[in-house]
Amino acid sequence: MLRRFLVPAVAGLLFVSLTVIPLPGLATEEGTTLLCGDVNDDGWGPDMADIVTLISHLFRDPTISVNYDLADVDGDGGVNIGDIIVLVQYVYENGPPLNCIE
Ligand SMILES: [Ca+2]
Ligand SMILES: [Ca+2]
Image (cartoon, rainbow, N blue to C red):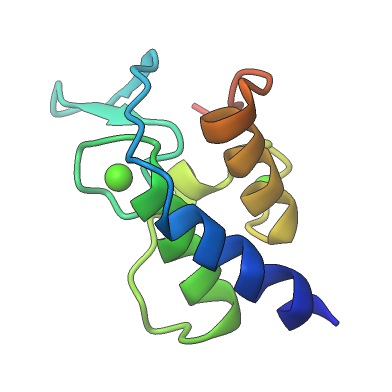
């Protein structure tokens, strides 16, 4: 059931251009800035690559590297399908602000 939803959703996302939306970052002790929603921790996004990384991590291959602090975009303390939904809404539907725990 879940795959019926996710496979078309991921396929559809692959045809949408990359969108990079600047966010207020999370400051670290080293003085660098982390971006809430930058799931793949590449310093960009959140964008389609972060969404695909999170979907792949949760439903295909848990060994795919994910920054859990930046992936918990709804701030509930866990990383799950709810975070995917919030990320998709934020990136593609002008959804509410992301809420990573600082
Ligand atoms: Ca990223
Ligand atoms: Ca969460």
